Image (cartoon, rainbow, N blue to C red; front, side, top):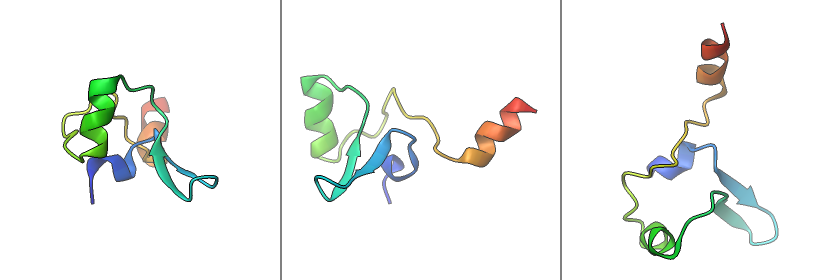
Length: 57
């Protein structure tokens, strides 16, 4: 499982039939993302709803 799998920007696209990154990536970032070598993504945000709620308390 990659770090993208639990990122809030990584969403399933019904039109394409697979998950895509919804963050606007530049050309170099997109190349790394497609090659699955985008390990230290500066846009990563946990998609865990529970962690979001814990910060609101």
